[in-house]
Image (cartoon, rainbow, N blue to C red; front, side, top):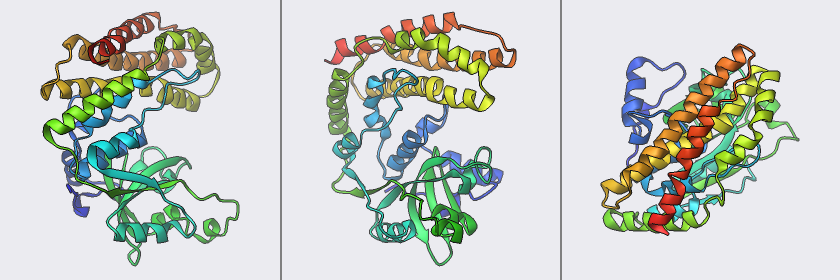
Amino acid sequence: MNARSPEHAVTGASNEQSAAQDEASRHALHRGERVWLETNCYVDLWIELLHHYGCDPHAALSFTVTQAFEGDQFTFPKFSLDDISRLYGLQAQELAIFDTLEAHVREQTKRGHVVVAEVDAFYLPDTRATAYKQSHSKTTIAVDSIDAAAKRITYFHNAGYFALSGEDYDGVFRLMPDLASDVHALFPYVEFVKRTRAPLEGQALVQRSVDLLKLRLLDRPTSNPVSQWRAEFPEHLRALLERDVSYYHLYTFNVMRQLGSNFELLSKYLVWLNAHGVEVPEAIQTSAQSMANEAMVMQFRLARARMRSRLDPCTDCLDSLEASYEKVIEPLAARFV
């Protein structure tokens, strides 16, 4: 297991040295040249959690070929837990919460498991720039150690590894009197991760990854999701101009960011396959990365249009995204299915 030292966990306002240590300990997918350095809390957490277990998350990125347009957003990218089990021998199961979350985390970490839990970002010091002590929002963390006496945990969140303690500990575990006595509060959704067998390695890992890619390609969208989005975009654009800035951030997170980051991960996956002897035409990888780039350009253009209260249909961005998609998924299916 490639466990990180708690000394590298960042608490509160991190100094430059601890931030550099955390950066250096991240998986390569969260370092280097990336247009979208983060995807969403679930994907980013699992990238780092697999890295923590000494596994290469590249092998499990075939889920990226199934992204569709869902009418108001693009499919939220997520690792397949079945794929994680097949590739790495790690089993993620739902954890029934009938006692305090703290009690269950103590028990599971004592058994060597990691607990993946939905919590309130209001109590996470690593969200200082967005939610910490500012707003309540649901997010997912993975707790790998707990010291109940010291009221301290270390945890994975987004692309990093952090620690919290004191009042934040009480908030995350709902131990504050006003939180603990709230009879209307629902139990959070929680999973625990345990090792059931050794991970695949070498050529066996690569071959299993390719087998899973073939299965995922059978579930690819039957029509171009960018074209479907394009048909709905005029209505979306009107809403972006009429509603407040918080809606703009939510929209771009669930549309441009999920689309762009998904195809950037797919691009990185195809590079990994080529590096491990599975030939994929470079043009497919380049087109996937082009989608990541164009989604970012479109996000900036919409921000500028909103600031100026001017309509920008982003026709050329949509043209590029639509054309690039056609050069990615169907050619991949022709190569592997």
